[in-house]
Image (cartoon, rainbow, N blue to C red; front, side, top):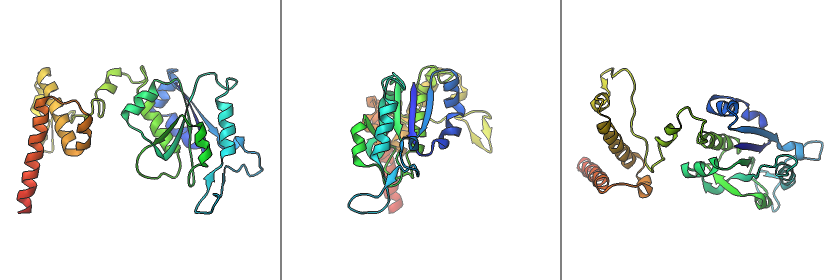
Length: 254
């Protein structure tokens, strides 16, 4: 996979892209990253990428000319013949989640455009294949969002992780949060590892982990259950848990 990022702060990517799994993926030749300074496509001596909005209002907007010209060049075959999907980060975008990360990980090339100030001149979205949002909050710029998306996407590329199966056994992969995990020592400050994990009985361990994943999701992220595939027994387990917690809350209120 190839990722190009358009930004006014390309230096922000130096550390994250050269550390941990992103660095390993590049060394393996599975991931290529390039950060481009949007100011390289400006034509005034101040290298201006922003301006005041028409009609008045607070703040500044990212100008459309540098973005259009940069995309013209980055999407051209003379720069790179690999077909690209152009992504803009914006609060009005589709929410980024694990399913979206999987979708993007299968694409050959992404061009991510990072905004700043009060956002983009609306006309730049004519060049968007996809608009993404990390959540219902506002960041200073799109750089951190681009880093998050890169990390989530690149780790799903086959061969990046030491054990490809590890990407299949984690939160959100089956619509549930991941089950609790433990490592040595078995006892620490009076806190015990669940005995089933020390039993060596792999069938019981799998059953326990599944049950814990269902219960944890029901307690902490019940909104995820609507999209999870549960057995009848698991749905009864969730219903029983919720009934118990409702009863307990009522008793405390009394």
